[in-house]
Every structure is written in C-alpha cells, then in structure tokens.
Length: 197
Image (cartoon, rainbow, N blue to C red; front, side, top):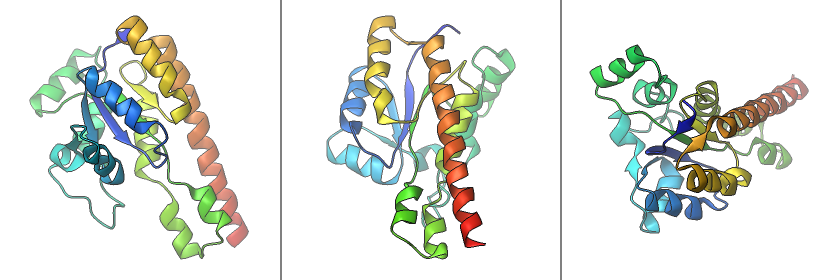
C-alpha cells in the first residue's frame, strides 16, 4: 500500500523526549494508543487515553518486565501483511487488531557500560522486546510505520498531516534507520561481552 492510515499505535520508549507531544498529536488524530510500563504511566498521568499492553495480551508483564510485548496478540498485529487477504482473515479469525505505528526506542545499554555495572546487572539493560518490536515493524514496512528515535517524530507528524497517512517512501526510510539502529545496538552488546570473556 502506498499510503498507510494510522489507526492504532504501540508506544514503548525509554527516551521520553517529545513523547507527550507525539501522543497528544496521535490522540487528536483519533489513534488508539497501546503502551507499556513507564510509558503508559507517563501518558495516563497527563490525561492521555491509553490501552495497556496487558489488555492486548490478556497476560501480565512478568519476570520483572522481561516479558511484556513478546506475545502473538502483539506481533501478529505488527507482522500481518495488510495486502494479503489470508493475513487479514487470520487477524479476524483470532479477533486481533492490526498495528499501524510502532514507536519504540531501546534500553540505554551504553549508559550501563559507562556506569561500570557488574556483568549480571549490565545484562538487565539489554533490551529484548524493543528490538523485536522494531525489527518486526521494519520488516513489515509495507503495512507498518516504525519510529525508532524521537528525531523522526516531527517528520512523521508532517507526513500524516500532508498525506493523511504515511507514505511508503517514509516507511522504507524508517525501516532502514531501524535496522541500522538494531545492528549497532547488537554490535555494542557483542563488543561488551567480548571484553568480559
């Protein structure tokens, strides 16, 4: 699809820069916002209507937050190809909903290294759900827009206003930026582990 309508968004960010402005904008556009943990708390405290991720998964966040978005009810809605009738039917059959926007950024592992945390503590700052969400959204850029960093929020809003949706060109650009980011993130972790061995 050339122009993607944004009806449902997943917001789960460590870096909260300009998050409230983005969420308020999405709310004004009639977008359903689904969120997790600290992001959800911040948004609801500012009066923004948010659907908790646990309402989507019907399962609580567990293992100190290690498992919260790793669930078929989340990833089916991200990975479904909206141009594929079989995918669309599967989403309907399981009473799921599509996601149109994945706005996620990652735990700050660089900061953990800088603070010289013990290895056991440092690994808790390795993001698993975030890269999984980002990579799923980036893979499915034909049907989803991914926003991996606050620096892209303004351009996203301009796209939505100008085109009444998000262009395929912008979605591909965001997918490219996402894979660059997750690649660099994994390299940073691998480099750190190598130093510990």
